Length: 232
Image (cartoon, rainbow, N blue to C red; front, side, top):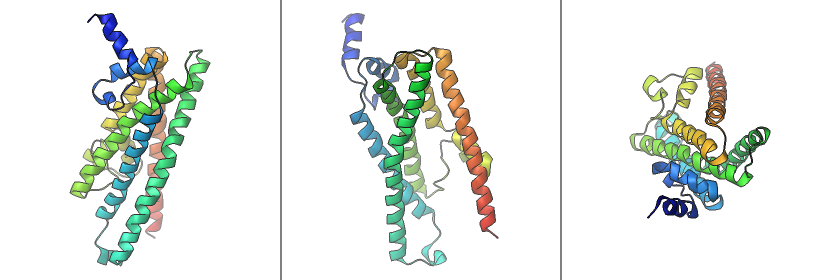
């Protein structure tokens, strides 16, 4: 089979969400010709809901014994149900909103730079790259559920080695393997799928990563301050 035939077979197939793990370049080639949204979005939402259930279970596992909390078995069951349900509801609505907002931002940047791209293609790229980050969350939460560790500390982040709190802890938690992997794939996708230059693609991703660090630091500092106030 010639290279032309191989290339033709590649672009005739739809991109695979799970293929992003092992063959992202091939998926980018397919996505450039045939971007897909519905099925990948459903899989991403299901992955997010699994993550929500694991968050609820981890919160329960990490709590002190029921006697120390003054809770009965019924109270604990109710708390667990409410935690899982509320986390699932937040995830179900927030994931599409976040994907839509980020797509609008990247789409606007593309238009400003006079790059011809469809909204569907941009949204497809965001869905596929976001999937990697969600898979990382699920893997971390599964491990934490097994060892009953702190659900707020990602084992694949720098903070799992340092154990810092407050602003520093939040910043170190942002340096996480799957999150960085997702960002790298996004930069590659912006170049290969959307048509940004390599320099522009990496600049955009790095700028948003820095913005994320700033928000994480502010959030971590605020949480530490509120926890200190509650002790009085």
